[in-house]
Length: 363
Image (cartoon, rainbow, N blue to C red; front, side):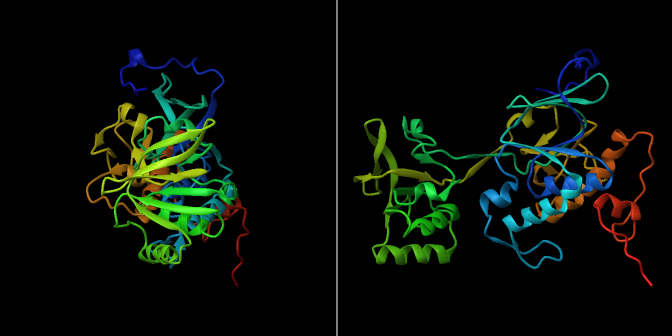
């Protein structure tokens, strides 16, 4: 899975039969990865986008889809979901291809200078350039540490809610103390048959208003809060029937349930990226310079929270800036004989044509 620099161990050009021929592969479908599609599109470069999550949006959608963001230029306030939706609309003219729910496992330089790329789903690419916009890595749910309970995954044990209707009318136990746990707790009160929130301590990481509302519902006997941790479970007829919750006082309580929802947050993992021969500093990719945001491997660029350089600020707007310069830095690999001119979307008829908009006529 490493990118080799020695000619003797490069991948032959004839290998990777049946692979998708690509100019650009973007790893990461968060805001910066989506904007990378836009910047490449303006240069007439089509992108394939790969993400380990089943939907686009990255951290914005996974961690705070309904929370306000205030530092996007010219957008006083928007949610993570709204930002993602707007970016998707913005890149529609470029018709990117998304490959979701799969992780890049192999990156190998070919003899012809391009790269072989393969995902965990077996999707293969031969690409001229790679853009790593993986945020802080691939997100994986932090799982509950109870021996044997994983056999109920996706039947009675869930780490995310895809279809809220599945949980209505059920006896729910929800574990966690962050925004996701509180948001879904408040959402299901009144819809589920019963809701029990389990958190290991009395302090919460969620929005104060959500915590206050939850405690009010407890006072009104609409739901229940138990301070403790799930330490075991029982099953009946092959189904999860109850969990054992041990409190700080050492007392273990049995809590009947139909469904167990666990929101312990998402754990970012650098994953296979760490094995691709890239310079890494404190779990981030070092860029060679801030002119192109290219890594130590020519043709591979790093944008957004995944990269590091002197003065780096982990802001979405910084990632947008990096994506613009990375696109121009990559263009010579894709169009080696073409001179790339800087053009403005306000005045360029060529860009208007690319974007599918009419060129305005001024008196």
